[in-house]
Amino acid sequence: MPRNLSPAIQSAIAQHGSPVCHLLSFAVGDVSFYFADDAVSFQGQSYQPWLIVDSPVHYTQQLQLDPVTVTLQNVSLDVAATLQSLQSDIQGAEATLRRLYLAANDAITLFVGSIGAIDIDERNVTITLAGDLDPTATQVPVRKYSATCVWAFQDDNCAYTAGSDPIDLSTNAPFVSCPKDFLSCGARGRQHRF
Figure 1 (cartoon, rainbow, N blue to C red):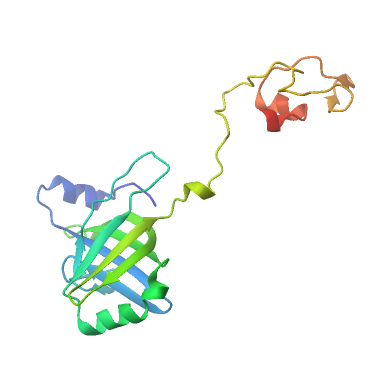
Figure 2 (spheres, rainbow, N blue to C red):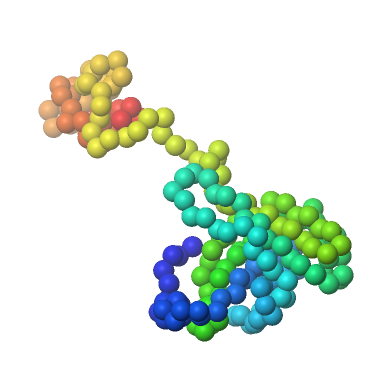
């Protein structure tokens, strides 16, 4: 998801008061949905004017993404019925929230995630978008890494053992020291201890 603004968007932003419109799109099977703040057409798609972004998109440097809640207000009965019939399939579908700069006819992606929850009543449809980042599925180091190895060569933490671990190919003898960088640890068969 690039964070670069096109020259057209930069120009639209420079014009204070340049109108914007939020766009929400998602697909369930072969049925695609397009909703916006206003009735607009963008990239060949017509967006229905029912979208309200209830919670703003926050960017952080943490291993979590705040969910984004949007509401579709005053949806037609046929769209509400379609969403109701697809409700169990909608959860987990990928959704994209974008901001369209009308003067530039160009959009930036604000959020890409999956639909976590959908609540449908007689007037509104509330959709909660969950981020793609799953910290529980991400491997993180047990300790912080540094540019050099923190262990003393051949101590219990390094665990290099002459005779059973790789030898110095330039001398055909066991290593007697270590410069403590990652490549040197790898040559000694200790990269998993770095």
